[in-house]
Length: 341
Image (cartoon, rainbow, N blue to C red):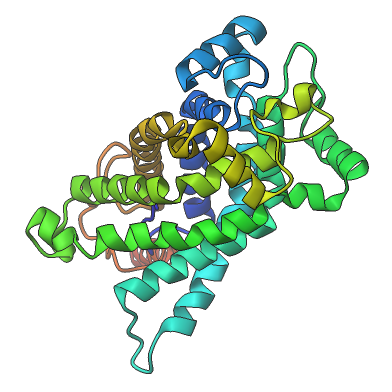
């Protein structure tokens, strides 16, 4: 849900670096909460069920503090291809939904974003499966020695389709996710009692957190079943420690409801919601900090620690245009100082 307005004063490479660092730091900071969420969704195999915090403490004691960041490496590596695919698909869907006058409604904009995210998720889905497997394995007796080993092992022992286990739930879950996002955004004017174009940075941050919280809560049961399907494997101890025996997505839904109750589909939701604020907070703040550094480097601001504009600089110029103009001014000044005959 986190988006930034395109700033023409930054190059494409600089925007990519800002977004990449923001994503890596936010994922790494909230990795223990992601671990707690996945453990609560999948279960811990034999024995009484544990909540997310008890399961995380058990992992800490059994495997060490490093285990709280299991799967974070592949999640960070997934950022670049996912972001590139999502951006490219988003632009295509925007053109598809625009009318002849170039106008697009709020609902169509959200649909374009959801469809773009779905396309990027489908293409990079094997990395999500690998992340779940790495989280569920025991570091003291690992089944996979790393990301590439996990990919090769799953492919050779379970087949190519195992890398896309649960993909249908991602596609289906995108519909309630989009509905939840739309539910928030259509009511923003009433929530803040003011027009959208006058929202402050804090309001935009709160909007992203609120939309993500509502959307994830509505679509969470699909994510729970997806995680169980991803984790179930004879290559892992206790068959991935999944707390339900099932033969498919529909059977998994039925077995969870039958044995644990409907609310079990929302196991780990608290940890997942607690992750939203620090995730978006670190992402926004890191992106803005990196942006300040590049704006100073490009010559638009007087300091890398503020947005105070450099006097006399045309802020509408692209970085390359500004450099060319500065070179031209320097050359003109130099020529003016040369002695004449």
